[in-house]
Image 1 (cartoon, rainbow over the protein chains, first blue to last red):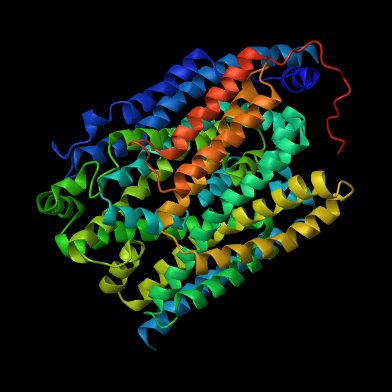
Image 2 (image 1 turned 135 degrees about the vertical axis):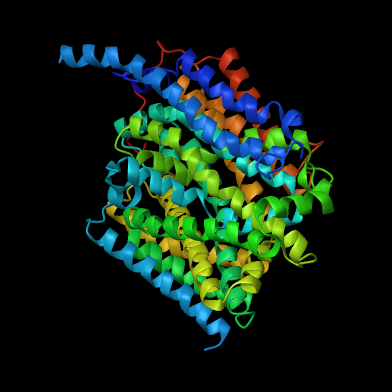
Length: 90
Length: 487
């Protein structure tokens, strides 16, 4: 299995593990949605006529893409320099 | 024409249009194995987005979501919570999965386990488990189609004949379309669903209460306990919510058909950009909840929660409109059902039968037998739908608990060099066994936690501990391990 592992995981991989920055961006929606439920699971105050728990989760449908856009920028800026070096080598 | 005739005409017109689009979109390409299953790996941002959206918004969102809002109340919020989070998880590992899939020409989920762990028994087990857990999901779609036809005919066509019709429709659709055809039918389906969801989501509360806000205020005054967890249940509280959301967010892309969707993309970057924008698509989901909440006040005492949306539509709008909603709902069942049955058939033939029973099967024959298996699987599902009916939600949770057990093997396989095959195999078997045992003995939720989540934790612990105790050594293994020969 060792050689198999090496062949599969190492061979000219252009993508690495997610960077710390991307992981931190990814953590934000988890904290907001999943790890503070008692704080937002309430009816009042209502926002735009929505009970607060509904308002909060709908809000995060819009804020999650923002966070992930941040994570995407982090990954994209990290991926760019090695890519140039590789194409230069060819 | 009677109301039922008008509504049914509407539904079948929409189904016919969808099937023709699928047929012509698929017919332009020569259907070899690669094209039929992963669409030739040439899908760009838009087509991948449509394909993924097409699979996510199933009958469950349409009928099950409104049904849960009706019968359970606030616990239905778990759907709004896991949808953005599953894209977050997908974002982190999808490019790496795509890269490996592209390099080793993977077409299915068991292919990944075979290539990464080099065991045909693991491959076969993953394939069989995948098929087994897709069947309840497929049953949701067939049951949903049956419900739609039944309600739209005002009860004139019973559930069983309605499901027989849906069986024929889905099988014919799969045969004519393939994955590329299905992606384009999703365009029609998404437009229709978007239109109908937005329209009825606003119109129904407005019709009865003068607006969504007023409807929710009325409900909050009439039944305040319905609006926060555990809602109108006694065991779906906060701990259930957190464990279910984590389990589902991890397992969503472990559905075998999602694995295939990741391989259809042109590049890993396409998948990543998709994951960034996908949560926006979920904004129509709460509208389905609002319809269910309106039904709580307008139609209390419905016998079947899954009927709440359609019954309310039938009561509020003229028959032709019920026809459009029903048609949108029917496509919403057909598109995912087609993809699911296509995937399950491939898994069964390519990853179970070929490595274990018939190593000499050619790609051409795999494609041929896969088509026969499509009929077989749809038939099995039809049998379960007729003789072992269950609620849409319980079916879905069984499937999720099962497929979530692939998660540790995939994540460790992608990011750890030391994970060993035996640990993954044992973890997977233990996870499936624990999840099945708890589910089948009605112990879900178990002590306030989602049963699938508990099984996933055990699975993770086994894989992680065997990785630490018996790490696979990178340097000593022999080169004799074959990569692609059927050994």
